[in-house]
Structure formats: C-alpha cells, structure tokens
Length: 338
Image: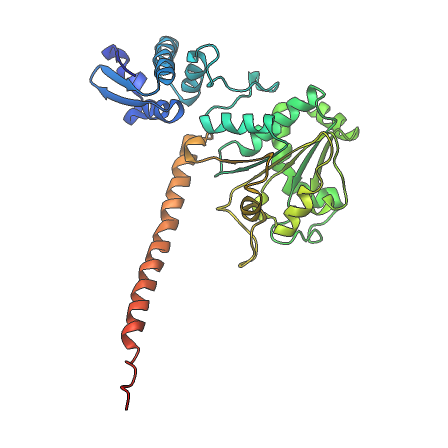
C-alpha cells in the first residue's frame, strides 16, 4: 500500500525533525518506508502500518499546535494515539506512574519486551545502557505487586563485580551491598513513595539482595529481577534460575558488551542464551540503539564506543591475516625424494 501525505510548508521542519530525525523514528517503530520530498511524504508498506503512520502524522500536526517543536516523547505519544482500535501497536499498560505520568514502553523493542514479561515466566533481556531494561522490569514488578498478582518483589544484583567479595567495605551486610543495589532502589523510588517502600521492605514484600545470598532459596509467588546479569558466572546463573518457584516470574537483564568478569571467564548471561534458546517458556529479548530512551546523547555515545571497538578488531583480523601469509611463505618446501 502506498499513500502520499501533503504537508504544510510551515509544519515541515516540525514534522520531519532535525536531519529527518522524526521520520527515521517512524520508519523504525512502524515498519514503513518514508520518502520525503519538499511538502510531500510518500508512505509505503503493510496497509495497517501505513494507516497507522498517516494517523500518527495527523497527531503530530495536532501536537505542533501546542508545542513549538516535537521531542521523542511527543512522537511516542503520537504513535500511541494514532494506533487504530485492535492494532498491535497499543503498548501494554502498567499500573505505575512517575511524576504523575504513566510508565509505558516507548519503542517497538520495549513493547515487545513488556509483552514478553507478561506472557512468559522467564525472560532474558540484553541491550545497551539506556534501553529501559531495568526500569521497565521494575515497573512491571511494582505493577504486579500492587495488583496482588505476586506476594513479593525480589531485586537481585551481583553484589561485587567479578567475585562478590563482600568484606572490603565497612559496616554490616546492608551497608556493604547498598552501593551495588542502589540503581534498583533508585528505580523503586521513582515509582513508589519512600514510606511505602520502607513499609513493604519491613513486611518482606520487597527484598533487595546480593546474588550470593540466593543459594538454597525457593521463591514462590514472587517476581524476581536479576540485574547486571552479564557479571554472573554460568554456575551463578544456574543457581539463580533454579530458585524459581510456583506462581513466580523471573526477569534477567544485562549488557553483554560490559562484562566485568576476570579475563577468560564466561558470562552467565551469554552462556544462558546459548543453552536455553530452545527451551519452551523462556523468552529472549534483544534491545538495540534505537530503543535507547535516556538523554539523546546516550544513543550517540553508545554508537561511538561500538564504532571505536570495531576498529581494533578489524585491525587485528587484518594483522592476523598478514601474519599467517608471512608464516606460510617462510615454511620450507618438503625435501625432494632421493
């Protein structure tokens, strides 16, 4: 299906965005092809997606009347409002708000992630910083806790990178692990009042624990989140996954590009992806740079670091190829038979 939409010249920059940024977002999230020429946008693709895109552009026009320019949040809102009834682009609802605004997935990858968490008892989510891996998992957990779908929320992290040696910090166990669990607590504070968190923790409805203290437990009627899972070993990952009890869900998040284990040590997150990929009931979600929803610079930073990391790898490959060629040239020919 192909549709051409006429754009008022005064709205063109606002709808297209700087360097056509907004059009790129629509391409990625709606799966359509967009060609912009002067005051016309040619939209092609699946009929439902094209209709959704046309409706989204109408919503963007409406928002431009209220705002001088559009940001990524406005685009996400326009996509949501432009989705027809029964269309698959409606984001799953979470009974959680931050600063008076409902928490909801803002990209196609995030929608897929939240849907997977709702539909599966064990979900692995890998992706770069800023993609909402931890935030959305905590939001879902808080939502399920408030709706009495689970009795307990358990937030887990490797307490110390590459070894979990808890003795080098002063104070009791809570003081030792607090710096490592702080990001999870920060996410909770965004969604729940401090007094409610403290009351839930006192009643054992919310628990923050280092991974080392999960051994031997069975977690029933709980939603359990393991964050920074790239810094687990395969043995630790197996230990954690086997804590899953009746009526429980587990979400495992991490960034495979930021493994802090000792050199040569296999990441439990990467190992689990390889071993469990064919297991029924387990979902694996891969988020990418297009799913980054933090400050706009975060996406550029991740891209720049990935590009920089690719250069040494290519140089090494070329060097190895050259070296192997030189070595082959130095091998003396076999002696001629007498």
